[in-house]
Amino acid sequence: MKCEECENLKFVIKDIEEKVENLCQHSSMTERREDMLSDLKQAAKDIFDWKSHILRSTNQENGKQDALRQLDEKTVLVVMDWAMKFQPRKYREKQSEWFGKRGLSWHVSSVISKHDDTLSVQSFVHLIDNSNQDWFSVASIVENLLQTVKQENPQITKAFLRSDEAGCYHNNMLILACNDLSQSSGVQIVGYDFSEPQCGKDICDRIICPMKSTINSFCNEGHNILSAVDMHTALKERPVKGVTASVGVIDESKNTFDVQKMDGFSKFHDFRFEKNKLRVWRAYGIGKGKVVKTKSLYKNRLVHPSLLHLSDEHGFFPCKSRTMDTKEDAKKNEDQEIHVFDCNEPGCDKSFDTLSDLELHLDVGNHQSSTHRPKENLYDSLRRDWAKQFSTITNLKPNKDKAKHKELLFGGSSELCEGWALATSSGNARFAEHVKSYLTTKFDLGITTGNKITPKEVAQDMRRARNEEGERLFSRDKWLKESQIKGFFSRLTSSQKRLAPLQNRRRIRR
Image (cartoon, rainbow, N blue to C red; front, top):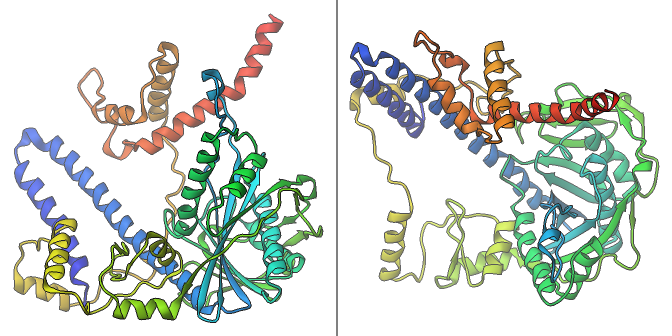
């Protein structure tokens, strides 16, 4: 048996392909037909890649929900993310001071804990004037964070970590350093799960926005925000509920840690730490996992007890955590009237009185779908159905032979193989020489004339470029995407910057 919705998607793509071939049958339109079919093939690939991404995102989100269910008085869940660098501001500044600013780094760690039936969320912000935002900075922050959590709640002994797959998080060094961080902090890191791009770190993003707002408001009251200390002062004077901050300095001299690389590390997205070994998965909860013995991978261990030097005057200040009673929340949604704020998660029917309750539900709540809405009158039901009708895409069923369609759905097994939604590596295909020559010419022309052409325009020109005989310069398999051209131009710019000092020395010698 096959999924009807998935098969409908294939029917639609096949139907579009047939219409393109039927409309472009004339010999003069052969080239155009092939171009359209090539674009259709690429678009279909992008659609199925998006489908795989949605499935991976949902599956990785199950890891967060399972971690929340495992929380108790001794276990916490930590979701981490680097915020976009904060641009220093003066209450009054010249126009010349607006340019060339160097951003201030700040790292947000949202700690979710549970006491009885109450979930608490507290965000710890590490403010740093200068930071490379590499794995060692993250390791330093994680160690200090776990030590702080341990001091505030001595009963905490275990922690789950979660973040996106940025290079400073998803790497051999940080994963293998977790055992040493557990020993130095006194809190055992049980597991580390990574979320899909653009998913999973919303709990940090939602708290960053009010922090930016309160810092900007503090600046507008006549204060300058030029350093991490100024940011700390703003957050302390104008507190955000559930947020505490501290100023820190990374001591790079203590970075003596060194390990061997794990084979196929980039494919692993879920890690569980066991004694002298590591259990890894490509996708959360699929299979028993692969066991990797870690003892032989270490060259130098992290032996220093403290990696982050904090300012005593600008440490973490007391704050009140955001809390949610899980039982009370479930009871309210069974008995209460219709509220103003509805959960925007597909399939979740919960609603809330205040925006803060909705945000807390999005951070740590369990999305549930109810089969009915008690105490909802007829007019409310009509309004809700009317809004739903015009806020969603209508699913038009493709025209197809019902008997043939039924045979395709029930007549055989699915064409999808095991692991079809796993992320695949695109590989590093080299550009042909005539393609590189064409791109280099376009790049140099922009440098000499000052009118730089955009990668999007180059991608369009490649499709139209012809030689003197009227033949195309590039076949369809040589067409490049905008992102590929952008990367090539970036590499050319970097190489020019590296060669510029050498060229200047040669001019001086002459």
